[in-house]
Each structure stands twice: as structure tokens, then as C-alpha cells.
Image (cartoon, rainbow, N blue to C red; front, top):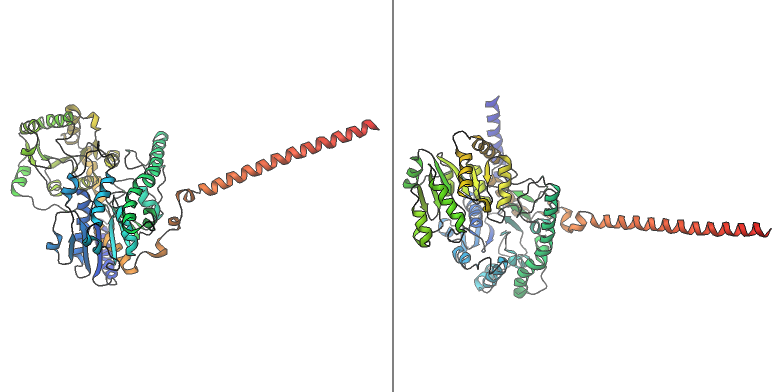
Length: 534
């Protein structure tokens, strides 16, 4: 029976691939696609590079790709069907950001970069109408480019690195119920207590004020200055998106009630491991007690992080028998002297500026991944079945780790609770000889994440081709919810009307009763007077 089911799954996959190939035949040859992601942080570049590679290599004769990016990778040298536009690099973009204390709202800084882009005649020429069959735009802090999307009159797809926020989903009719859809910055699950639902509602309502009244006007002012104030607001332009494609999956984040125009391709960047450099492979393979990968993403600067945190990490690592691969993000000799001196005391550690993260996680001797809990890192760990010990530092990281901890495939520590003791205890809980439950749960979690009828690549290609075939998604795929605001969607307007109607009816009844009572009293009084007179 098991053999039969295996053959059945293989046959089903072959049929699906044939079906995708047959559908692709109807796509116009040399479809011109524009990928817009010039203000990306490094993790977003990883995703855009993944989808660019899929488009450039799967059917190179069918797609002509233009990639507007800050990525330093030269795709136009790798693929003949790719041309690139880069006004500044991701390094220049990230290094120019002021500190959080001096600039609490980073979107203001992005808007300044966007003005620089519009001041470039080559970029303006690139964004002229009639050049492309499809546009794929980054759905995170790229709204200043939406004025161009409106003027280009080309079908566009919004691509997000994780579950998109409500200001992205709601214009397309994908309203997320407050009761089961935790806000990105929380650590709530989809089964919230009353107190958590109250907090979630408060944060949601705060976002409803902040985004349309503070954040979006900053972006809209950029394209108003460029093209005029006659252009629609971002939310109205977003309503015309053909699809939202999200790097999310129900095994990593809570499932949500979404429409057919919301497509999940979580883990599209995940892949099998490749051969490691000899020195790195030897360092991992020869470790008798296994290896731990320590990587806190591209946004974390160890020289700026709280000293008590780095001291606790160094002390915990010094007590371990395992070897450690520590991604520093920069050369060790460029760190401040006091921190470099502490790091140099560690004898079981290989310090690297950057790491081939997936290739390391794919190695069988890697026992644990210590991370910040970023979405891409979490997906890669689950894909390769490596347990996670995370210290979320902000953004969506707490939410990412909530599903992991609920499933039992990893541990999350609060930043304020990190000490030498809490770290060593958590590490021992994951990789201790007698503690195999977390490792086993991660293997099960990995199976759930990988178990799909179609790979993320196939799903992505199908829907890109779908939009190209039909020149958008038309009215059949679009819900009428796109034409409703949040009050109409949740029937607050009709509910208010019914409450008002009931109030009016009750008031009318009350007035009628009073009138009848007054009339009856008068009638009775008149009757009594007549009786007395007679």
C-alpha cells in the first residue's frame, strides 16, 4: 500500500508539471516583466533574487526581465534575458539610514531615496507607459512608486516577504479578522485570550490611524510632486493589484481566511544544500559534538547591540563542547577593540563575515541554529529540519517564533531575559543527549512545510503566467470586497442602520404609548366629569 501511495504521489506531481507546462504554452512569447525593489533590505533581496532566477532560467526564451534593485549581484552578466537598473547599492542604502533614536520613522528616509530615483531621467524613462506586460513590486515601503504603477496602466503583482499587513491586504478585499489575525509586531497566536484580543484590536486601530494619516501621505507626496495631485491615493491604486503573492505558509504562520487572489509561496528561496568550501566543510564534519550556527541576520550590528547581551552570548558559547560558526556581518578586525578582544578568547568558534546559511543548515552535523527569528531564517531552519533557538529583536520576529514554540520545534528567549544561564539551559534543552523531543518535532515540522501538491516555484510561475495570459485577473478572481471599506465589509454600516431603526421604532412605540396613555387619561377624565355633572 505504501509503495502504491508513493507511485501515486509521483504520478500526481508529473501530471501537475505537465499541466503547468501546457498552460505556459499560451503565454505570449518574450513577455516583458518589470521587477521593482530598489529600497529592499538584504532579506528582501534574497527573495526577489529567487523569483528573478526562476523567471530567468525556467523559460528564458519567454521572459524579458528588467530588475530595478539595490542588489549588488550582477544578474545581467548571468542571464541574457535580464537587464538591471541600480541607482545605489543595498550597502549604501542601509548605511545611510539614521539611528532609530534620530529617525523613528524609516519610511521618511525611504521617501527621500525615492525622490532621488524620480530625479534620474533614466529611471523615469524606464517607468514609461507601454513597455511591460507585467510588473512585480515589493510590497514593503515601496508605495512611493505606486503613482508610476497607476500611470503605466500595466497589470501588477504585489510581492511580500512575509504575511502582508492589513494596509496591503484590505484594498484587495482580504480583510483579516482581529480575533484570529495577530498584528505582525505581537507574539500572539491565532487563539488569543480576551486580553490578547483587546491588545490586538488596540494595535490594529493604532495602525488604522498611523498608516493612512502619517505613513502613506509621506509616500503619496513623492509622486504628487512628480506627477500632480490628481493621482489616486495608494490604497486606491493597491485595489487594482492583480494578485498578492506572499512568502508565507500555514505551517510557519497562523492560517488566515484569504481570497483566491492571495497566493502563498512560502519558502520559495529554500533549496537543498550545495557543496561547502573545503575549510568550512572540514570544520563542520570533524566536530565530534556537532556544530551550532549563530547568525542574527543582516540588520544586526554586534558592536551596537547591548553589551550585556553579547557578553552573555560569549560566555555561553565558551562553555559549550560544540563548534560554533558565528556570522559577524563584517571582518572581526574591524570591530571595536574591547569586543574583538572578547571574541578572540573563544577557541571553538569560526568567525565569518557572511555565511552560506542554507548550505550549512543542510549539513547533517549541524545541531542547532541560534537566530533572531527572521522569516527567511525560520523557513530555512524548518526546511532543513534544524531546531531553532531565537532571541527576537523586533519587527515580525516574535510572531514568527510563536508558531515554532507552539509546535515544539524550537525555543524563543526574550531579549531582556538573556543571560549566560538562560542561554546554556536553552541550548542544552535542544541538543542535550537525553532531550530529543525538540529535534523530533522539528523533523515533523519540516515534513509539514515541504508537503505540497506543487512546489513554490511552480505555484509562482503558474500565477505569473495566469496574469500574463489574461492581462490581469479580471472580475472573476476579484471579490466584491475590493469595493468595500472596513465598515462596510464587517457590516458596521448596516448594523448601525438596524440599531438606529430599532431605536427609532422603540422611540415611536414609546411616544405612541405616551400619546395613547395621555389620550386615555383625557377620555377617562372627560367621562368622569360627565358622570359628576349628571
